[in-house]
Image (cartoon, rainbow, N blue to C red; front, side, top):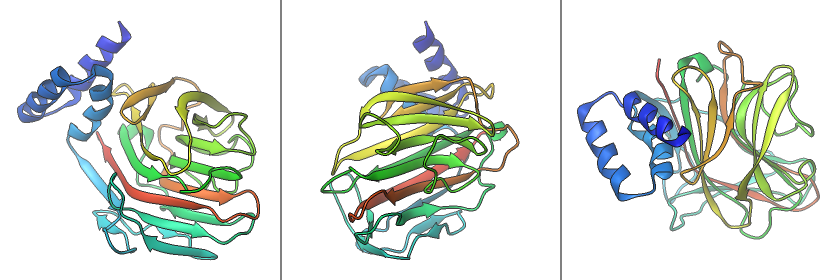
Length: 256
């Protein structure tokens, strides 16, 4: 079935005998779907990452150019949690304030078969009146009050002004229209999420993973194969209430 085929594809994508051994050990000890999602971390060629340092706010860069970090009306604090070290970006109590990070475009392309991973944590008090975007895009999406149309996107969205339920949406857009899928992963306050976007070795489909589980699979309205993409983890306030986005780590690899 499809799950078995995906496991076979993930196994084949691991380029070293040692990596395959560890993957097989893990797969026999845990849920197969979980390790199908986790197999991305065993693929060769991790290219770069940005992560919270623990106890401080400047992000640690591993072969990554510094992202743009929102600073206007933002307070950055270290926020270490059981899920790992975090940097908390907290807005003022005003509408339309952006927080989080976004890189320059060009760190990934769909034709390079990227694997994107982010560990984020929601505001400790509430997630209402909030827009969140985590993933890959050729433009900053924090100010986008509708579904993408002209942007190239493969990422997770939560938008209380656009979505009718408090669940992550998996969104792809190829510059003209979007495909948005409501996942079964609820968005709640003070909750840690591991979000991943992977491109199949054939270039399609694009798969979305949340906390190690397959959350959605898209074959339509995918970002352009040769479009330069940026990574982002962004928040915008939709009312005059302070909100925070907590970032633990963003990492990505390219198969090509």
